Length: 492
Ligand code: GLN
Image (cartoon, rainbow, N blue to C red; front, side):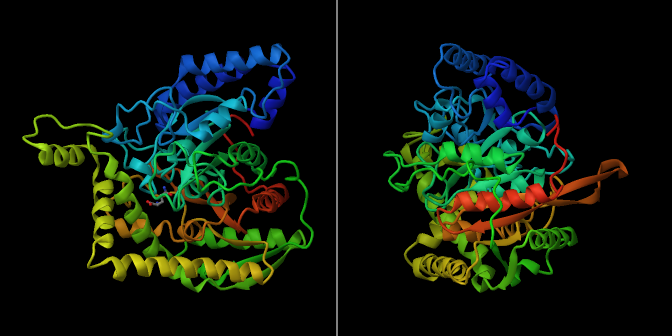
């Protein structure tokens, strides 16, 4: 599979058709999806229809969009008027959205061809894509392991060469962690950069939509299309898109990176520490100054996140009651019984747990002890990052995850172990900052049957608010100076 940039350029120049590219992608999906289970739905006819429209427009001399003919997959919590928007939940199994999310509309208007919807942890709650009514998605690099989550389907689709780029959502790491596990670039934009209109809300003050791609330039291309003010989302920022692709190949002179003390946690897997060290060495070789910083409040970020996110989720998910939205249970004896049954049948155990947690921390006797305290921590997590930026850092460099992709089933029964997956990512959402994960090496591990596999490891770069263009350039410097990215299925 060619890069998204090559596809858009070739389709615009009429070197090949959007239809031929789309058929090729659909062919790979048919071959690969039974192995990795990345898609919840594949839109064969709809994709060909969209591709033909792009070809007709190009033939008619209309200006080709920046994503002309690029096959793309959408996480199944992003509304599309075609097909269903399931959130991988029994609750929305048959939900047909009457409208397109702004992000989906922007992609389609830019010429992208939506080939299907991808698997996720139910309502985006999870770090492994195991909590899904469609079954777990598998990591294409080792199918006994998870692809990360909750945008695991999008990551697996790109890593398996089914699509050059895919869209995820990130509330506490759900784009960056799957990118790290699958050897991809994944970008969480600044809160407010991308409209959330039509993204099924998990935690509204943390959610952002962003791209997963094989390299920084493809990620920048898609990011620029996604960004912008939207009248349907009052939290979307009134700023022009970052134009991050334009200068992505330019090296940044005078680059200063901060590495937090907390990045060297003894809980890290050895391969993660090595990846961080090699990234620092590579940046130093490029002339960057790397300084030590401190993010003391990051030790409390997971605790604060697992109060704020469930609190918002408990409120957001109240609409799924079998009346306003969602599956309605049969045979209830009265209204209360119907509401209870519908919610009990519709939600899986992780979602139920979060709703109960969120309701508890917002209840009158506990609100101050939990929720207000978590908000104070949130503020101070942001202050820590701001101090690093004031000290001159253009970005903060740290691991994306404490370890590589873990085995399917390994953490599903251990909520704390699963939540600790998010230790490096959730602080960024609490602070509302832009961040990305980029491949930074790999480590050998044993696969089923005793074979050895190479598992990708990612490092994370966190930028100043609305500074995506510079962040993408910083990441691209590392990408171009090293060969950390794994060889990709279907060729790079
Ligand atoms: N793993 C985190 C959670 O379970 C983050 C999920 C996300 O970013 N959507 O909440």
